[in-house]
Image 1: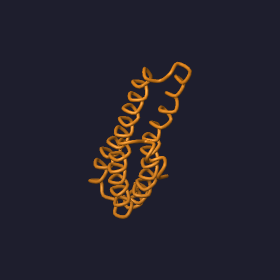
Image 2: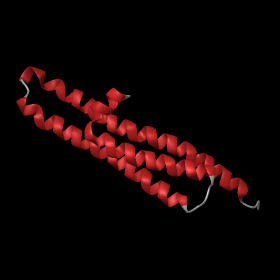
Image 3: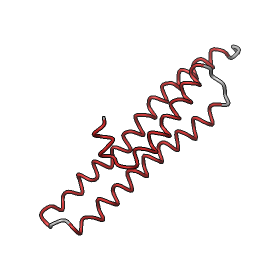
Length: 117
């Protein structure tokens, strides 16, 4: 995991911070489901995904920009840079999945507290 974090570059840090905030909000919602936490979860989820996407795009741009300095027989190396950049998206998706699981528990609990129709 540490190697993947290192390979992802600077974009991993904001993705991790926003993702951990999302996870904390989702766990809080699972423990004590209140509707006021839903907009927070949605906005943090979007922020986490967009942050991972930004890390991916900026890493891909860097990889493709440096292709001019690479010898012609090694031009395929941009694929390695692309793979490294995808670590940002993978981290964002992993944190989103964990948070969605916690939010699902909260949604189930809140549905059980509602009066039956």
